[in-house]
Figure (cartoon, rainbow, N blue to C red):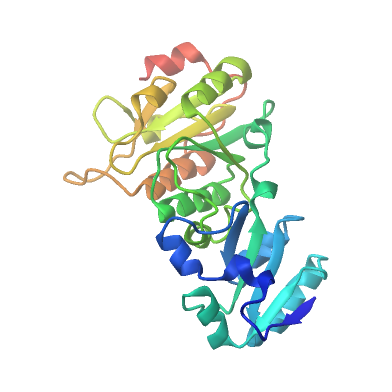
Length: 288
């Protein structure tokens, strides 16, 4: 539904006005909305029914936007069209990709715990404990998508996965990998007690097991921690095992998203073959 824009005071453009300034003061969007940037991200938005409120596009991107709308059966999504230089004047930043979209947060933030952590059958869940960097949060979702995580649990003080730059860093996977904000220690405790999950914490200190020695259980949560402090003591207390990634001498750690990717790869494809049945709590605790 093309709408040519002549007046930037049009109230329908409020979602896009001065985005850069709003981000700098910590207000990256009006309450209940988020911004996705680029055609790849917009396509992932359109794949979630009801998530896209509107699209703002430069004239040169209109044909591609029309094709995406047709592909996802959403021809009624409003598309505001304007020349490239006017898009940048409205939003406050250079928009090399030529298109951005406004989404509805409620559609992506209404998932239940069982959507992220299934209570039957094999399941692999990624949990972030206090990961505060916007790019790291995005990359963690990309890890989860790459290695088949059912979803992501976000503990307190994690950065917003629907922040524009987090979505971009994730290649749009914060829109397709389900997530849930939670009090992480109590959520992990419940998953262990009631649904047979084992919890693997990733650390970089002596006393942990080497990652190659870890085997995947039927239902498992992998926890990655804060970029500087690591996993909190409260979350560590809920871990059945702690693992480190063996590295050359003198290298103390990897970026949190890289460590998450290495760990998930091992569990999905390496020697961490899926163990049939429920996790053996006694065996896991002996490995700590």
